[in-house]
Length: 101
Image: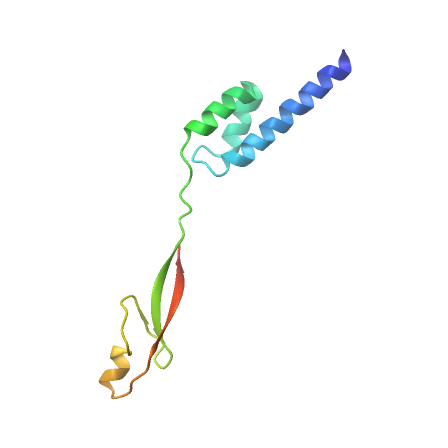
């Protein structure tokens, strides 16, 4: 009788921890899901978890073009660097992906 209770209690806590890990990727947060799962039941925690929207990562990539000579970045594609071209030098731009946070 006591062993079954301990096994159920351990499973209850493990499920609550797994839900809180997934909750860190949601707007509600991991701590809130953990508290809801412990005090109300993991089933209620799961309902709160899946009704909460996912967090935006806040990070994406933008293609930019960089001049090797003047180190200036452009968002529009050019064959040559417009700044260096004004000075009479034709420098090809190299494409690269920039992380925007």
